Length: 210
Image 1 (cartoon, helix red, strand yellow):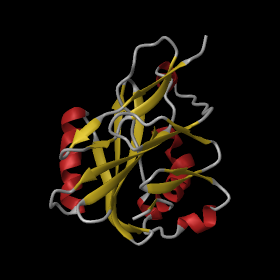
Image 2 (cartoon, rainbow, N blue to C red):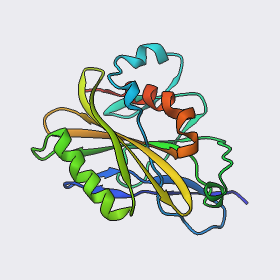
Image 3 (cartoon, one colour):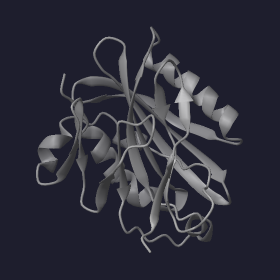
């Protein structure tokens, strides 16, 4: 019987539109889990024009933006609140807790509006909401950066959920006017070092079409 793919997304309501920070996992007749994280290495900040070095890779393309889809990553149907999502296909994790919930590392792109806030103020609201939702979430490495000429701000977060230790990278990119695009990367703390450069390259390839 075909495995059922389930996507569970934690939605942060900052304005009328939600910013996604959830988690993706493949379900085999198991009860859904709760949440997964994402992370963006501050040491990789200030990445510009990554698309030029990744022309040989596939891209995840929408009417509004495009972002690199490196080898081993597969586009999947976006969950509610997300504009696009991709999962690390055929990922083999050794963490028993992650195996139990069939977690797979993933990234998501979502749209929101700043409603007059700066990127820093916007992310403070997001972090506040996360702290209310995820007990013990720890934030680190918040910094400004630039992605393909667009002002951006990123932070990392770590937390434990269902016995598994996760790490998140969230990057908020300012678009036209009050638009903000949020790229969130989710993986285990144990695989963070392995995916750190890939997350940085993917974030750096994000390009708005207008």
